[in-house]
Length: 176
Length: 231
Image (cartoon, rainbow over all chains, first blue to last red; front, side, top):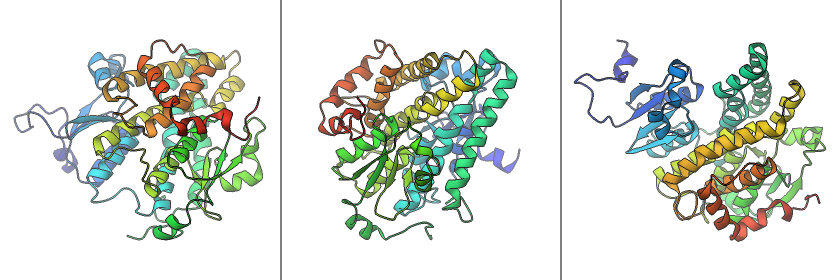
C-alpha cells in the first residue's frame, strides 16, 4: 500500500481500524467537490477514513436511502468530524480552517480572505453546479450526449475566462 | 506569512469602514439581496449603485472594470479599494470586519450548519435558475422551457433543504439566532415564487420566512424598498 494509502483506509474492516473512526470522508474519486476537501485534509495532515460513494454504479450510490439520510442533497462530499456530519465542500473546508488552523488554507488579511473565498465561489457556484453530474444527466437525457458535452464545455470555458480575469488582479505563486 | 493583496491595515479598515462602502446591486437579484440583508442587520451605511441586469448594464465597460465577472453583487469597502465579489465571500468579509451584530453563531459546528445551508442555496439552487443559465437553456435548446427548468431545480433544492432544516432549525435556519443562512433563504423563496414553485411541502421554510419577515433588516433589504425597483 502506498504511503498515502496507509494514512487512511478504504472502507477498512480490519482489526486495525477503530470501531468508530473520528473522521470519515464520504467521497468519489473523481468528484471535484470531494477532491477539494481531500486537499484540505491532506494539507492539514488530518487522518481520516475514506468511504467511497460510487456516483454511477447501482444507479448512483448517492441516491441510496442510507446515504440520503446522511445528505439529502444526494451529493458527496460529506465529512463526519467531531461527532457531526458536515456537507457542502466550502462549509467543510471553513470548519477545518476554524478548528484546525495549523497549515492555514485561508490568508489572514480581510481583503485577501475575501479574494480567496470569491475565487472559490466562482468555481463552487459559477462553474461546478452548472456542469455537475446531475445537470449533465438531465441534458443528456433530454437533448443527447453531444449537447451534454457542449454544455459542460461552455460552462467551464466561460467560468475559466472569468476566473482568469479575477486572478490576474491577485495571483502570485498561487491564486491569492 | 505575507498576505498578498492586503490594501490597508485592519485598524485603518475598521475606522474608514462606514460611510464609504458601495454596493453594486439589482433590486431583484437574490444574491445582491443577501448582502443587503447583512448590511442592514449590521447597520452598515452604504451607497446603493444600481446595475440594471435586464438592460445588460452588468456587461458594460465601466462595470466590468469593477467586476470582470459581470455580476452583481459587488462590494467596494472603501473608495478606491478593489471590489469584493461573490455574495458568500462578501457576507464572510462583513462578518470578519463587522462581527456584531453577528450573522454566524459562535460554535464552529453550528457555523458549519449555517455555511452548509448557504451553499445548498448558493451552489445547489441559485446557479441553476439564475438569469444567465436559464437564458442559455432557452437560447441553445429549442423548445426548452425556462420556467419548468427553474421550477424543477428550486423544488429539488428545497426538498433537500427542508430535510436539512429539520435537523438544524430553531426559530431560524440554525437555532434561534438569525444568520447568513436566513439571508440566503429569504431571497431564494422570492425566486421560487417567480417560478411558481409549490411551497406547501416546505413547512419549515415557510415558518422561517414568516419569522424573518418581522425583522427590520429583512424589510429594509426587500427589492421593493430599493432605489431601482421597477413597478
